[in-house]
Amino acid sequence: MAEKEMQQEFQETTTAENAANNPVEAAPELSELEKLKLELEEEKKKYLYLFAEFDNYKRRNSKERLELIQTAGKEVIQSLLEVLDDTDRAEAELNKTGQEHTGVRLVFHKLRNILQSRGLKVMEVKGLDFDADRHEAITEIPAPSEDLVGKVIDEVEKGYLLNDKIIRFAKVVVGK
Image (cartoon, rainbow, N blue to C red; front, top):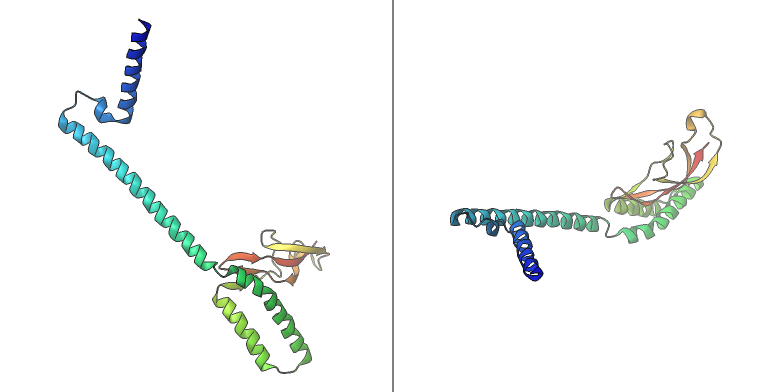
């Protein structure tokens, strides 16, 4: 007897599970037309879900591709930042001597313009509030005035943005 009861319970459980997964089979008293309508609704839901998933995939894929294109030369540009720093120092020395070296200045200017056309921007930091997300504090010195407390007083090394993403933090001196 116990075995027959277990079989009957198993059949009832299986029928209940099938009814939850497939509403068409759950309602035997429905007409053929109503069953077809229920099946059609289920298929519509599946189609809309699949379409939404595919649309999300396309959006995500195009966003990733755009980010990849924008930062494709990131490593090359990062390695050129040291060269750019050297050109700034060399240009400062040229200004001190007072000699006119238009060819050298033209090369420096061209290098800066090429990097800017690729999305490189210099971070402006002097006089701004210190922001640990954008700046790297090298040291703190007593502020010359009260309004410079907590602000960037000097820039030791320039910070750079590539397509509005930080690729090198600005190394700064902060007033205390």
